[in-house]
Amino acid sequence: MSTPLATDQVQGPVIHVQGLEKSYKELRVLRGVDFTVARGGIFALLGSNGAGKTTVVKILSTLLKADAGTARVNGFDVAARAADVRESISLTGQFAAVDEILSGRENLVLIARLRHLKNPGKIADDLLARFALTDAAGRKVSTYSGGMRRRLDIAMSLVGNPPVIFLDEPTAGLDPQGRIEVWQAVKELAGQGTTVLLTTQYLDEAEQLADRIAILHQGRIIVNGTLAELKQLLPPAKVEYVEKQPTLEDVFLAVVGDTHAEGPAMTAAPARPSEEQR
Ligand SMILES: Nc1ncnc2c1ncn2[C@@H]1O[C@H](COP(=O)(O)OP(=O)(O)O)[C@@H](O)[C@H]1O
Ligand SMILES: [Mg+2]
Image (tube, rainbow, N blue to C red; front, side, top):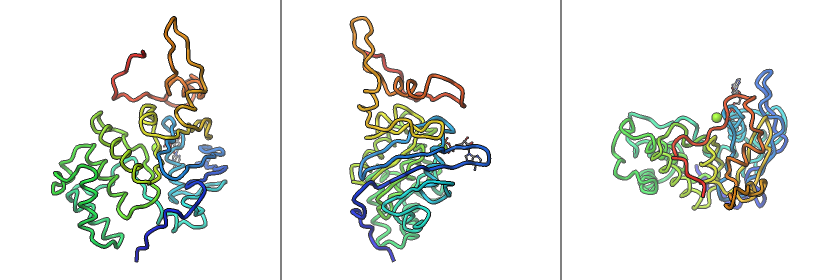
């Protein structure tokens, strides 16, 4: 039985996280994480490698238990109502979970069947069209490019129309073309009213995609706002006669501190050719 999920289930934030703490033995990864995500739109959790982004996503998707704090997704407490949370979400992990031996269409039909949905073939065809995979529908996934694979992965997470989607580093390891394709797919998603929480370590990805950006650093959210709000944290730097608006990278380095104390430094996307500041 599959009942459609009421998208107006909660009036307040779709995701509500308060005082979240998590340690792996001695390693205190989350030290009191607080944020909320409103319904619809794209929320980016930005942080360096090892900042704890995947840990947050795992807790929100009920794969991991927090040591302290509370988290609600779609109105359900992740600890007390794990099954309801799982019904409300889909998770696309850092590594594509598609079956290589099957075709793109077969992967989608399989998921639709597993979710006991009616008309799995039609669901598959609709999603293939939405993600520009119709031409490749009958080909084995092993022949797909990285971008196609990731798009299929995201399409699979949409089977059953979950109101909340977690994308953990959706473009990690993709080439520039693949990244752009996935960005388009993600924008498409949010356009349909789905709430997207994505994690990324790429500043330009957050800048491109997110309505709101939260920076996770040393176990806490140190900044949270729209891109415009984040940029307002820094005054425009006057360089000779040209007024230069701060980039998200400037803001990030200013709030995080330009140190290399903890792990590898945040990287700007390697893929995009650097643009000259006007
Ligand atoms: N199961 C685990 N056991 C021990 N340490 C872990 C485990 N999972 C993650 N960590 C550590 O916790 C920190 C945060 O990991 P993670 O949430 O994966 O960060 P991110 O996704 O931001 O790169 C890292 O230092 C990582 O090595
Ligand atoms: Mg991660």
